[in-house]
Length: 338
Image (cartoon, rainbow, N blue to C red):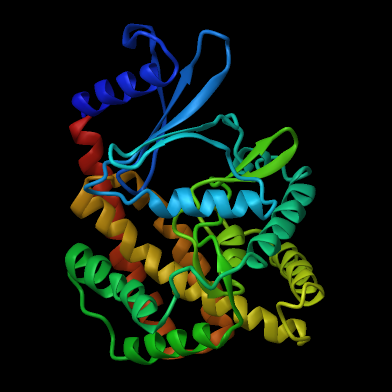
């Protein structure tokens, strides 16, 4: 990693006619991928964000392509100042550090920000989707199968119940039946930055053509404890109204639209439960495990509208006790190594 940091320092220095010794890189964040982000302050006092995406592990071309298209389409995405795809380096506009997540900590300020996020999600859905990869049967199946492979077998050492296949197949069919639009695919409060009182979108390289309610489920049901049911219903109906007004959705009852949101919530929650276990077991990123109970709660909420009583009973009687015990053991292990 030191060699890449040195190379990144030399690259940004050369781009601004500076000595590498004058460049001080401050870590901003890493994420669930192999990408890392740094902030650099230039002699004129301005700052930039630098993305380090090792090309043997991360393909930055989708990020660059989507950034240009969405910016041309009027979406608030960071300006790209310099790009070196061979090296895996990108210099971009610095939007600051205030995430939507921080704004939502004050429940009295949440409403206007969520409403802005809902409108922005519709703006994303309206972007041309023809050139994006499709969220097709194969991809949905792959993501769902992360749950039995990584969460059940490799982490908890338990088998999937007999009811799993019926749920898996039902979710794939129902999600594919929804209107297919441009989706960010990771549209949550950590990927929305508050800059000049406006929400800006980051981490959009995974945008695909997928279900209309996918980004809504990502926004409302991610690494957060569930909002009150009435609040969720209010926001879901606000999104439905915007989607119908934009011509993305044929008019339907609020109850039926809630079912669509439940479908994508269930699919995404199951995917994330498997993904977080893979991040821990394969990549050593254990911090994601602590977020799993939130996704289990979101999954339960979704299943309450979708049926699948046998799977829900297994979730309550077998999976939840196993998950609770595993998380407790993992917490003790981490404490002993500190």
